[in-house]
Length: 215
Image (cartoon, rainbow, N blue to C red):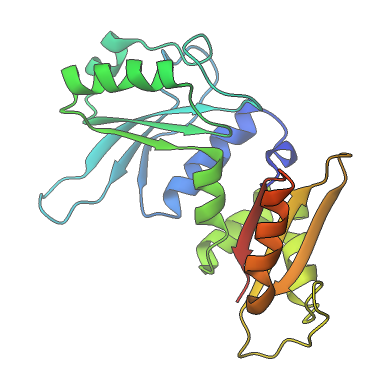
């Protein structure tokens, strides 16, 4: 991934990020992050809806882990969820949920919330933050300053690292980020004509990469 969640200091900062992440998508934070027992609900957020006069309320669980989030890391308090007055369950994770946790949450959502369940994995967050929308770029700079600087440095480069072509304003420009087998991180600025070939080369060598369009 291009986005480095290690730039966020701890779980409390991650919850703060999640609240800002939702605000950037026009959610209203009804209940923000707080210290102490939360019964699995870190945030209550209201999503604007055009069809009704009131917002759709989500009970939000925020989990800040490097590895997959399972049931032991996100314990479900069904009674607390039902009593929250929310209409659905939302999970925002820095990594991703295990299949068993996802099945468990879908069961609770189906039985109590008409199946309303939404996940944001670390990869989903990356896809949203790296769009060319100003509200996301401000969020990126605030919580991921090193990632933001890496992107800006490559954006200013205006030269393809693969073919050394000078890039003009009419050229598509991509940032390809990956780790070599020895652990070295590589961030390459590539043109549209080289993007597919470098992704194929990395895939053939069993190297997973992330790619984002800079312009």
